[in-house]
Length: 537
Ligand code: ADP
Ligand code: MG
Image 1 (tube, rainbow, N blue to C red):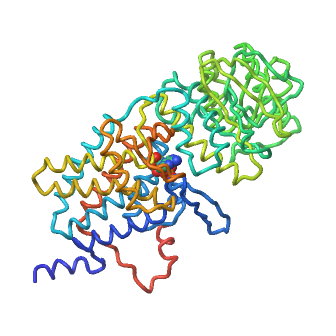
Image 2: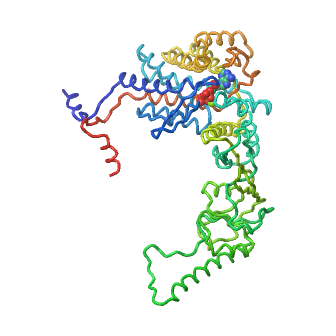
Image 3: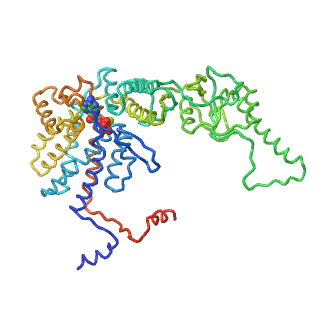
């Protein structure tokens, strides 16, 4: 009776409780993982994504697939954010994260059906994660040579692009990471400092790395020098234009001299501004917006070369590499705002004039991505993003672990024996966790057209018969062999796998904590546009 009264309050809500809620959430997670699992590994297949306007994209990248898909189920969205966070933090391992989370959830559902309480499962999962991370670190070792680092970078691109392009991009990303290696900054430093510039035409293997910032621009006045050995630079985050009338200002033109007076005053202002820049010794002036026609000859006369209409991102990079403070109002510029550039030159790339500027404050780089169509270039940029992200992070943490399902097979074996030391029901959860990790070798095998059960059993047997280096035996997806991954160069960075295991555990646990799902009921007579209209209010 009391319950019924309470339920009145929820009459406009669809409610899923307890086991039904879990079943529904697990279904959503498994469905999402199902959409990406066939892309996992070097033999994964591509997906074609078609947007509402009919444009299409073919990709083998898990995070691209799910970020593009229109997914509404809240649990699926939770998995998507776990994979996006993996992408942000580690740049790689996104598909693995989604597939592993779904597998952890599926195994939890089995346990719940056997009568294990979700909070016991959560405990067991947390114990497993802790143990797995310790074991991962124990197995890992530092990359031994440049070749080995490069093979790690190449592994992240396996199956996504052709071999020759992958090795080309690997070299670019490796060199770029070296340049950035002694710079301070967070994980986003590589995005900030390395500009991706698309130039149409040529083959993707013609892509190359340039020291400095390259922009598809030419100097405003071509009578100023085409290149420079360096000097002082000022950056204006605004324009250098004639004073404009305010929107609602009016001037009463009672005699012909009034307008001219207004014009003269604005020219005088520009003159003052240029004089100021000149007295500060500025050689190069970069302006985000426009530069008025009247100011151009004044600047040229003062020996200042200028560029206008810069993108914000480029301004920021330039400000970083030259140590220049961006200033909004050119009249307020002072010596402290100026920076130093160490070189400027213009060159023609694919028929378009480009300018390269180098700074005194260290590494800014531009990678010029060539390719005949925008799709080809985008695919190459995505591959480069992964390679760059991984090579940059490898500079900071060069520890590697074996790929090809080796590490997951090892962790599963390790956790199974760890489980035996736990007498409580958590033991079952740890075993479920161990079995979930095997989804990685299983899926790699499936995608390579091999029998997943045989592969997992074989790997496990091969690993236990080699007491010294067993953990390094994995699956070569191209030949089907079970061999030493370090000898083949199939290596993953430690941070990718650690982050993926922690992220998956965290996502699975947050789904397991949900005991009740309340869905606001949609009024069946409400037209679809009602929702959008409400939001606009
Ligand atoms: P993710 O988005 O999770 O990075 P990928 O499609 O990049 O997914 O696949 C990564 C997995 O593929 C890793 O487990 C890696 O060890 C494995 N892998 C890469 N190259 C090979 C290979 N030649 N043989 C077997 N496994 C490989
Ligand atoms: Mg990858």
